[in-house]
Length: 485
Ligand code: GLC
Image (cartoon, rainbow, N blue to C red):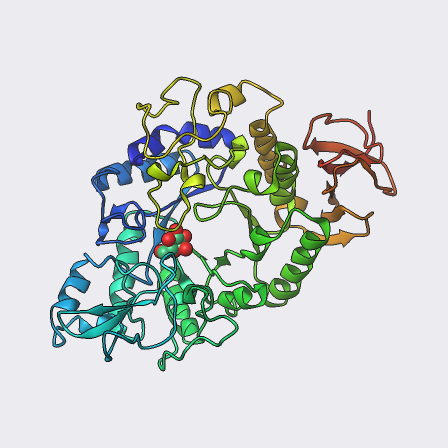
């Protein structure tokens, strides 16, 4: 399953790849009902992943390598085994009772129609002992905290300070849109009833919570970053979580992740992101894969498309976020029913990343917690590092090109007219200019561009040449002004 020492041992690889920061999914003490997203002690490392000393060493060595470390903050809910909940559940008179959300009723009728994620049933569990319902937007083992209680907020700020004092550079905040709840807990409207409530919970009371959190982290000279998982299906709503530059620094924007591999759909995503982020000077993020969704190589259906998608992801205006293994073009693993472990059906994307072509693929076991992803004998770090033409090298070149170009890191972005099936945009910062062409079709497409352009990066090879006006089928190019010398 991996551990902190293992991540530390792979820092040289991450440096070679060129990434700036790592976000670690939760490694805190947990009964692992939701693989770490059910925390029973926010201030300790689960023994399965190591110790606090291992964490400190990881931070120290990452920092020495110029890599920042973000931890996953899970503030919406705890584990039902967390001492806070154990105490809350013990009696209606418990001092921790109102740290969670309880409602009167009868065992046959939950307090409202909210649906819990992964379980397809009510987001409420009847507590036999105290004869009340408690709310959980996810599993029954993940009771929701009540953020309208200032003690909860203070406790969570203390936890954040604990990790910032240990040197973390920021937090990826889980289900951040879950924190503000309508105090009336009204039924979800009919058009969304039946969907997990966690996809629609979006109450304005979250904004003062985030403003106070931001003020709290801003005191740190290291400027820790707050990246929120705002798992809402409208970019217009995601943008609100940046506040007036006084809430989240960055928010995940998932509608592009859910968009199909289609030029019209992607143009729309780019237009919508611009329309909602720009006016508030909010800096966008782009993400195609994570631990909750099938890998994009699998969704899009071919390595060619995954390569073109890498060009898109790493050249759009905003911060790109990669999911470990996408740089190898990994597909989801096939997980037979007897090996399923996740109640949310997300095992396929969580399969271990193959480091080499040996039977243990660098993990010290040939029987990891999930099956290897397809083609692990050849699609692994060692083999692909040795092959200049691999998708791994493409990612590395893109990351480097990005770092070396002000236009790509910080420049403006303008969509350009292009033939059907192609998304074209320019990036510009002063004299530094780039043009990106992504061909979503299965045929080569001609794109007329005024002036002479060099191919700085091509998703399928043939770089460093003058652009001849043709973007290959399912291909993408990053172009730089100039002609062959
Ligand atoms: C987020 C996490 C997911 C987890 C859920 C509940 O969506 O990304 O993995 O299951 O929150 O914490």
